[in-house]
Length: 416
Image (cartoon, rainbow, N blue to C red; front, side, top):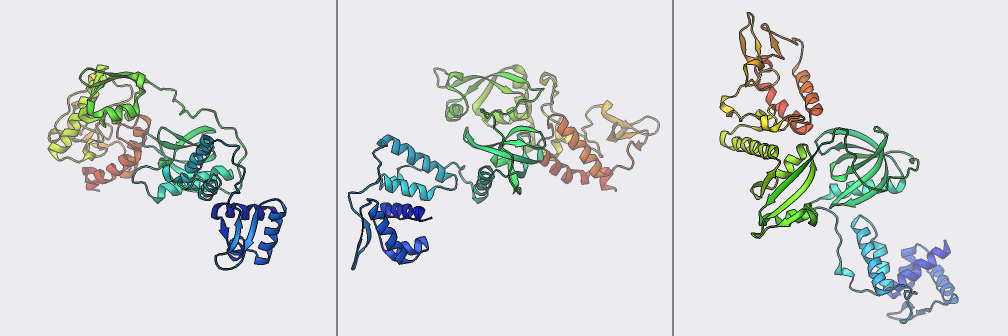
């Protein structure tokens, strides 16, 4: 305990150069008499520390004294200060940075600022990071709600192993108890974090931070052309070897991406700054989605009207997609929301006539196929279909929200 206090006094004097015995006593929670004994011990050990009485006096180090910092070059000292700045940016290390700056006699250490948070991020993001960091350091389990890139929500309990900053984002590498395997989690998609009791067994995390590919993974080779105004984003997302600059300043990119709903959202985020050159199927997908987006604004229809008419279905041939029917001409099943664009989609009345209100899944021979089903049952069935078929209705939470606002207006549920 005494040795630790002696080093504490030494660090404080290196940083402040002069402190009164009272200031040191309050800082270290000991008596002034103990401080003077510690000063004598430091002096006996060869540290040039002395006490000066009178006004402006105090306990001082001789001006020429510094700890042995010559073992490190100036470049190495800069690297240490940079690392400490990074640690401070992750909720800690302020005192260590201050002490090392004093040790290296760097008065102006404000030349560097490290901030890993997004623009506009708030206290919640910093609190999440702090809690995950604590779970890693204390080897405690962590439970939370997680949203996948496809929008699926799941409850997870994990054994945290490593925090990783990659591609501008913080990730947690952890052993997932429900999957019984290693997984990576993006911190901004974690909610409701709770620390577990006790400690977790030690597990060696994988060397590489790579997301596991599903067994049905499909990649698509894309050729993209970007306007010059999108150059800054293109260079953010793509490797220089994938980019070719044309004479007029436009950029062409050859790349491979997973063929899923995320890719559609990513490409659309470039708006008119992007043209998909190939494959032709993805040109059709982009055109169809843009038409649907335009109709939202031209017809005034809410997004809930579109939820049962996906743009991209797993395994579907985009070239076979039909033209979008104007919203005012469309009819939907008044039980499950399925589009009734074709006669074969419709249910039947008694005698075989086609139903004008219900699909053949919900209504046959003048009666509901599931007469005891509730609106919640139908919503649950649609959400299950959504999850099992690549989320054609969008992320689960958004799809459920739209269904619950739209379904009460459908005839079956409106009439009770």
